[in-house]
Length: 441
Image (tube, rainbow, N blue to C red; front, side):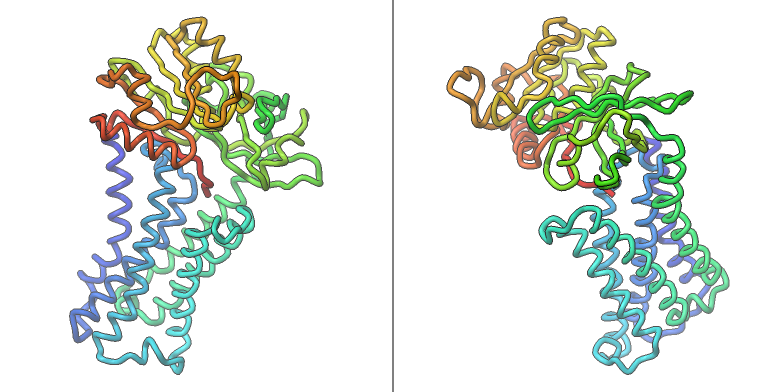
């Protein structure tokens, strides 16, 4: 993780570079501190916005240190900060020169009006990204809208700043930079959204089998193109898949956890739950269909930890998928690692991989103990009932949490409750790792 400081420092340096150049090479042209602060906010905010393209483009050099899910979470938070800087920019300029025409008037040069339009576009893009589900927008429709607004925003911001920013016109270095940056961002965007999918589509994987695990969970088993190998991956990582099936079925890219054993070099699987919308069509996938796969991503895996007293896997519903990959890997490796799996579902019919979990448990490789927790059990259920929380986890661990590594995956509320309980019991942050399923770019 120490090498993770390299991309972090690089990111900070790139964001602050235009401001540093402006301070060093542009003469003091303005009257007040607030005016200069507004100018600094604009330069920094613009750079944060432009760097969002890199954060969302699945660059392996960045992702390998943190996991793409963490990179995307950072992307979602830092863009709000960047937007706040950009919004504060005209307000500080107006206060600095003692006039509000910059904010209230529409009788301004075209490039100032373009800046106002860019700001509105920025607010809309951040708002729709933050409340996409609340607005009941379909993921693919939102993604297209998000991308279109992002391209227009980058173009508008750089045109506005090129004409309105005297610091840019007074520095040849900044002038060149203001030409290179938007061009580089648009090239990276084009590669991420169009060229890379085209390249992947030239050598698609083949769907070999579609296995029904429960009434609404399906495993899609795929093999690589002839002569190709499945890239190495850690158990628990995820992949982006675009299925090409019957013409009546949608063609969309989505991410799903890899549920297969990395030791299996012939096939790769994802286990997918019907949650409505696109996932409701997974059952219609047929052997012989093609799939474009881009993988692996994520850092959610037992292999990154070495506990002295075993693992505790906490799964809720479809959150079992990274753990079945880990358990398959441990089993095929003949591991003697101690593992407690606490697996929450609504009822017995919803338990995926139940037979396989029992088989792995019987082999003793790993030393697995499975505890099912059902929130809506039938009359004949004699096991654990209710929901997973810290108190239940501690009890099932025999109140012995020392030296254990806790990994949790599933619904947000379950994961939040489990983590809160573990922290209250004194489990250190470094002994807890989580994965929460959410839509990613």
